[in-house]
Amino acid sequence: MEAMQPAVASAVDHDDVVAVLATAFEQDPVFAALMPDAGSRPTRLRRFFAVGAGPWALDQGFSWILRDSVEPLGAAVVLASARRHNRAENHPTTVARYLHAFGRHTLKARRFLEVMERSHPVEEHLYLPFIGAAQPGRGAGSRLLSAMARAADDAGLPLYLEATTETSAHLYRRHGFVDTGTIVAPDMPPMYAMWREPSTS
Image (cartoon, rainbow, N blue to C red; front, side, top):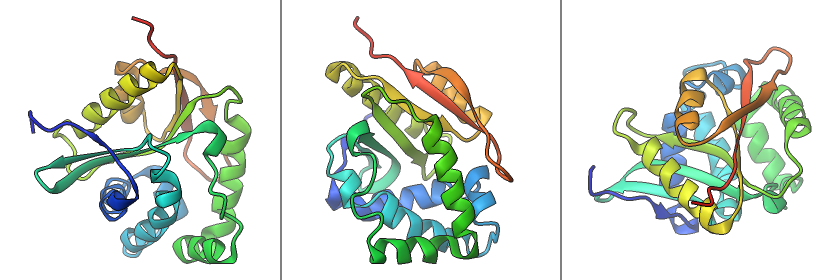
């Protein structure tokens, strides 16, 4: 994969982005708490990312995809802070899709998102809600982080994310992120808020 470089993703990459993220988050502790049935989790994750990483997000021009030839290996959804909410999030169709993804845990998911929202910074920034690799250990995450960090530096904008594990937080620290706090919600694993100032060098 040495010659492979991330490319800016758009709506045409939607299916590949959904496939990568659904695979990457199958063992994630946050999604495991919100989708506790391991057997149905892969299908539920695809349903969730079909909306959460939909064209509304990818067409902002900040998201990334990494391919090895034509195979998608990694993806990252990056949103402008002023546009980080889906304008159609309260549309009945969107609500139904989230219900289909979370099932009887939908209310728990909504309450969790409310806790996350209270911790979200108010300064203008680029928000990284999702980054994942279809095949961990091949360097996809580092390549994606390097690409988005360069883009954020060029735009003069900080980056913000919530790490779901200490392992992922360690990777983010290697790419210039610093810890800003811990997000704790009832019956959920902790998340680690992290911030990266743009480099001026």
